[in-house]
Amino acid sequence: MRRLTLILVLMLAVAVFVQPAAAVESGASHEARTYFGIPEGILKFVNLILFFGVLGYLVAGPVKKAFNERAAQIRTQLAEAETRREKAGSFAADMEQRLKQLESEVAVILERAQQEGDRQKRELIAAGEMEAQKILNTARNEVDARLKAARKELTDYAGQLAADRARAILEQSLTEADRRRLFAESVEQIGQVRA
Picture 1: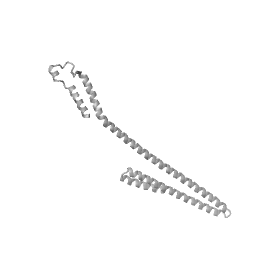
Picture 2: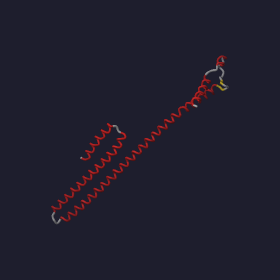
Picture 3: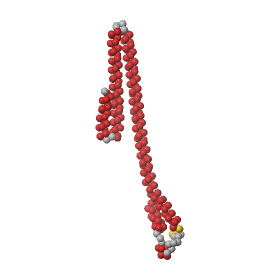
Picture 4: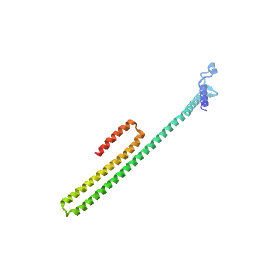
């Protein structure tokens, strides 16, 4: 169908732009030329419209297809970015919840330690000021040790979660050289956190 349309357009173009041999021989070059009873200007205008129509018909399909493919690609990339953003938000919310939980546990530990210290202090006042001070120091050391243990546990857990998530993301998008560099940086940062 396209070939037939193209052939017809070419034949019409040849008919409009090529002068008939009879008109050239008779010397009728000053008169308004007509072809098939239609003035030359109208035929040229129709030829121009047909040319642009065929050009638009032949080019519109591939251009439209290219735009549609690009739009689909952009939609896919937007969906992937939204999914990554949601996962990151979920991860951040999970970490925030765990931090709040650990903070509340630390507060409970401090409260219990304070209560224990007060109780022991009341029992040992009769035994002497020296003994009360010794027990209070013991309670404080226990609280410090539990705080350090809770912080270490939080750091270890957060590090493990971050490493697991980072590994999943990195496996999808990084080269081997990038993986090695990021691993070295992570080890250095974990060492700084523990210090």
